[in-house]
Amino acid sequence: MATVDRPSSHREELSLMIESAGSRFAGIGTLLFLGAPIAAYLSGDARIMFYVHVALGAFWFGLDFFFKFVLGPSLDEVADEVSGTVNQYLVPKMALVAEPLSVGVVGSGIGLAEMMGYFNSPSIWIHGALGVSALMLLIGFGPIHFTTAKMSVELSMPEPDGERIEDLFGTTMKWGLVQTVLMLLIIAMMTGIRWQI
Image (cartoon, rainbow, N blue to C red; front, side, top):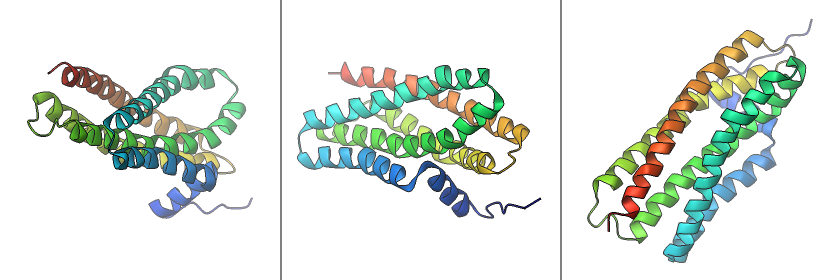
């Protein structure tokens, strides 16, 4: 039986994940989710930044809930062969969308707060939102990133280890649920910012 070399470093895992998702897909996603907030900020118009921030935030929120509570459970109900094939392409694509998207949401939120003068006299809501945002990025680019990369590698193997995939998926989902709670918390804080004046 032919052997397949597994990546020996995280850089190689990342390259395999980008290859599985498609380098063009990864590039367009990164350009869109990071480019839109930068362009909105450079426009100097707080209204444009507001709509970009809300649009990206709504997309992130919807993607998070759809994957965890609709798509994920649905894939559990189908045959392992079908689920494995779908996940082989879905997992790296989800990761390569979620990461630049999260940076775009947080960055546009910070840019919007600055444009609206909230940092001139920051309230408890601003401090709280910044703290929660930083924690979400740490989780997203920490445990979720590394377990997702390992899961992408395992799914790309000719004979994936189902038990390992299940363990990695379980770990990713646990950290993902923490992010969901933090996402709801930051929405509550943003409401506090909105009504503080």
